[in-house]
Length: 410
Image 1 (tube, rainbow, N blue to C red):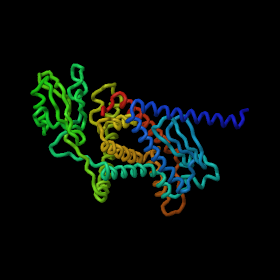
Image 2: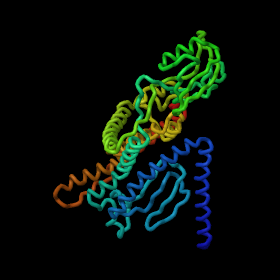
Image 3: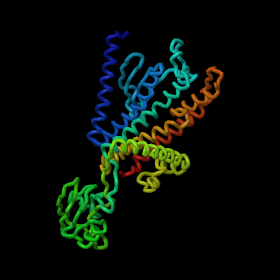
Image 4: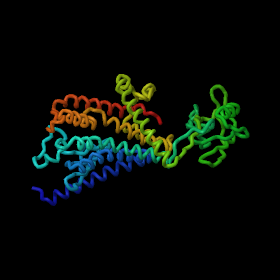
């Protein structure tokens, strides 16, 4: 029979191995792409904050929370503080807090019954159930406030333009003229040789008329003027080609505190409406969504009409790590992600938070003014719950496949 010391040694070894696995995985991801590592950590933080909202409100309202885990799958390591076990599991695609007695089906020790979720008042149950989404909304509001106060809102600059994309290779497999010159997205080409290019059409004319020529480019980058020389390519029609795409030039505009707060509130309301619209589009076009999920790899039609194109955590990491996004755009993505997840979690379906809110509200309505606690029999809702879980699993795994087989290409 193993001793207590042997048991402690085993737990220590298991915890150490778990820590090494998590840290090693993150280091490997960072080696592949530092941007992907950063986005992954941000998503993990968002998930953690969601569950932290449930945990803190449960503690504040006197409920008993026995587990707080980040991730799913087998336990890597854990530790106990008070009555709660905190830990990490390997699949960092979610998290959970276990509050005792969430439904009438949960078996609870008699002395813990007064601290169960099901025995609390309606306002307390409503607060705990909605706390995850409230955390998302708080993060979104803070993100918008930081955008308008410090980072700056992207605003187009009249008729001026800048490079949006750089083609790395020409048709013959060689480096494009733009790539050879070291041009980057966000650069503004002020002149080609002695010919100014204030408009996009001016650049097109200057390049088209000099196929295969060596040219000197005057480039504005981050407020500094640079000069680059390169040899223009030749397209199939014999015209010169540089290998860049253009877009309206954008500058980031910051505001004073009162204006930033006003714009934060108005933009948040707009994004909430867009999230509802996006969720409705997905449910209203389930056939189209299913076709995309079952699309073969490298299918160009899979990414048409992005309103009904599901995106998984994998896709969110791909988009957030793209070097085509600047800091302002990444912050906007962070805000949009939080608003959408917060709204989606409020859908009145178990096992989503909105399902618990709907049950608590229904129970309160049934109680009326009687003062007697009414508790719904959750067993009657299990078939619907299983159907929702199956749909979410299909939707989630399908979105992961889609993001791997047909990435958005940001």
